[in-house]
Length: 366
Image (cartoon, rainbow, N blue to C red):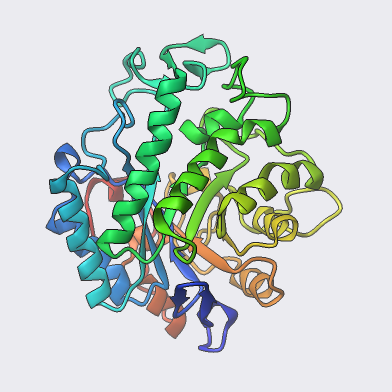
């Protein structure tokens, strides 16, 4: 790649200024015992900042709600010890010239790591893991309001700790997405409805509470997806009109950037259009978007876990899409997980030393 490639041009929006358009995608690493991120986590992110990643989005960090996590090694974003750990992460990333956002997360109802039945105290819109499998707690009105408050509290802490912006995880079949999706939201109150516009009330109230907590200039990013871990082929918004009905109200509520997850970034979202998911979201909301999906891999999301090599596949297509302004930033996951030096390797054109991704890499922080 050349230095004047669209990939290496700067990006500015509100209070956020980035040196390039490359984002380290959030990837769960489970290296924070009892929810506390240690020095190894700080060094892991600092290496990517030193390699000139434009923006780092951390692994999912869970908010202060009972059963917001199914893994004791997933980091918390509450409590003095965990927040002090994140303060160290922010300082090390900034010392290396990087920008960083925490991803604020509530898993909702998800499978347990040990394959046992899901904890009956885990919470979701209707207590469902699948549309016909109730294994957890249906959230009460009090639970919902407390969760909104917990997201806002975490956002306030993110700003206080010096994070450059924040991301809310509203994708992939986790709690916020469970409210979006009629497959898991079977409620009969105001938190449900026959359309996406009605089912986005929960996320809209979270964004409004976060905006009130962080002020008008602090950037809020929302990660969204059509696909779910429960169903890779789900398409909630089947038309551009449905997409606009879903997301325009969230932009009005305070979302600055939409982080649009799809399995392959180069694939169109709707028939008779070349725009991908992020391209369409930018078109219907008018907000900046981040695209993501198998960047630097020769296959797709699932193939990457079988060991697809981290190579500059589809980079001509990526550069063309960025130059056209179809979306604004591109997130890279497994390729950067495997290679702390990925950005500068791509920039220099020397990709011979890049490692392929494999499941074994999840067993250590490099």
